[in-house]
View (tube, rainbow over the protein chains, first blue to last red):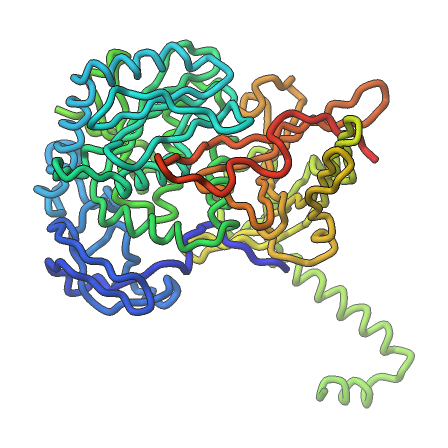
Length: 321
Length: 221
């Protein structure tokens, strides 16, 4: 009998005991990476484990990046970290939760106020029925640049990273899933990681990667944006991903594509179902620190955050105000 | 051992065969009571645990075998095999079982063999170690089957190449039966659905695989 892992992060990375969660700014993990952060959003203190399987099954422990950093960490299971006035009781450090959401909403508004960026995304809206992928990259120091196709491939463009590049937009053609891939998400982390501009002490929310796509028999397009809530958490996943074998990374992408492949693209609710597949998958592999936002109108003026409600198995929407 | 001694004392040898047969039947019935719930692989979203996602419609059988694309002195040979009831562990430690297709390939370009992973198929490996593997039987209405008729199926499999991982790429092989004139054929789309990233001043070691992306029509050998 051959044994394989469906959750590709299993066994990789570092884990800690959530008991005794306190504000700390430096964390060192035995046999893992040393992670130093001055991010006050990060909580967590306690015994460190090297394997998910070493954790106490009673639930007092939680993998780093699982979204439960301390008893009230940001970026995790939004069932218990709910934005006030939206969906229920307040159980978390609401200021941090609300702050990240506000930052992301402001960043999206700012993005659309930038006419150069907006015009590129509007252009992409007209190209979603084409058999190839299109995209643009955005930097602090130059006009938007068109992303190039990969050699011999019509279904993938290369995201520009490094220097002052801080954002990107792209389409997925009709022959591929109209939702982010794992590599798209990792691409956002790489964008943030490689960014360098000494004149801009930037916030996490500056970075984005949008996707514009349409569904079968529906000329209307959807535009989504990946936004960073908490780079420290996001980086935990990135480090875990980087530490995987090549085969594990490739498997991770395939697992998500398998989920997309069973979505009925003719279903009137297909857009929501693709989102649900993505958010459930992100939840299942503890991919935290990053959120998905969706434009609620084709003019891209209004956005909402989309979260996975695991208790009720649906996509929870939190509008930007 | 004790049971055996008692049985030898109590029963004559002629009755032993009958006893063992009855015991075997009881055992079989008991095991059947504990068998896993079988769910058809086709159309599943793999969200249940402690079940067996089985290729109940034998869709995989349409793809297994040796297939070959030829164009002059360039050829691509792909062999696909079925692996049944493999155990898959979720991140939380829960598990299920599932049937898979695994494969290997040989690519010859202008008469020169560029890569050959076919020998892997004689080994018993973890599923992800096979250079082609997967289990997704694609149905009409899936984004991967926009051109499908109501009874058509496709097969979505992952691809990898030894010593050539390209960051950000998500290579896949999409197979569809395309028989013509009594000849068993397989249409293959080899592509990546994600393009990774590029950084100014950094030259990636690889930007493509040994097998070129594209469409191929392979003939059953």
